[in-house]
Image 1: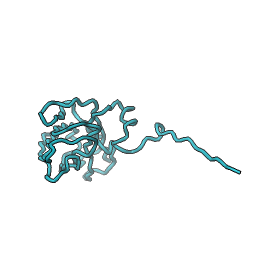
Image 2: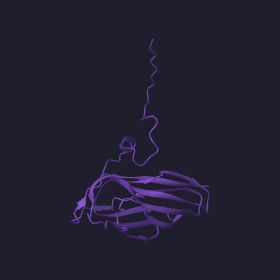
Image 3: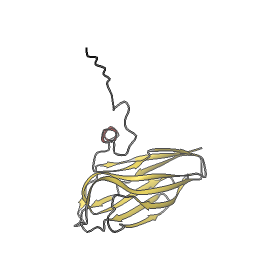
Image 4: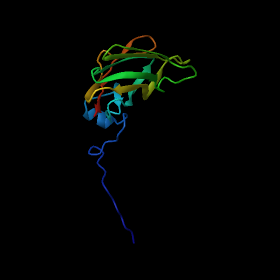
Length: 167
């Protein structure tokens, strides 16, 4: 005697809470290669800090990136920016950033012996600090740029966004 038990999983009704959820990103109009933000929604109290990471999704032969992040500087400020692990190799990546009241530019370049990397991963970790109540929109700007080892641009097809809600 056999007993079969089955169930149906509908991942579109219950998307994974992950920056690598390709189906969820596509539903949001973000197609690879893309720059996304995670977590997309952060709730905190005024004067608290929280990390939001910049992720790169499905890129091929990337050697450098300039991720431009727009944020509401009337509600949050950038407390710190650290490199993610996407450009990890035997050498630390070149990593610098410039914060200019609402526009954060993150420059990073691969310094490994192969001079390029492919796939998906964490490009940078941004620590935001809230100083006013309300929703602060965070978005990846279309001014962002990805380049290969010959400094030829790689088309970005998706730009993520998020929000920091402070109460």
